[in-house]
Length: 124
Image (cartoon, one colour):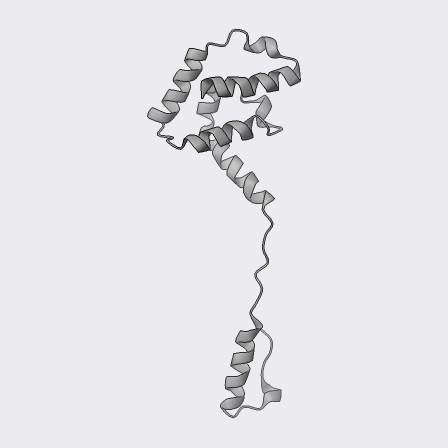
């Protein structure tokens, strides 16, 4: 995980022209931070971790703020929530349509009970 995240962060740093910031990176510390994320913090879903790595290095705001495994671990919960909410925002909201058959059934019952069809309330 550490090598993968380092590669993703390196791409961001190269695009920003600040690759020199990653020259002194200790990948063993990065690996230790990811170990702690799994073992101590209890984040066992590696697919979620990888998806968050992808998202954080593509998000316009977070890509410039999460440039280390330590910061990734510190902000993991917040980042996961933001990622999930941004993914939900991209999904189209489905309008809940009323089933007109319910009103038709109510109308049939109203008339069958002897009600005047002109008196039936078709509103809500």
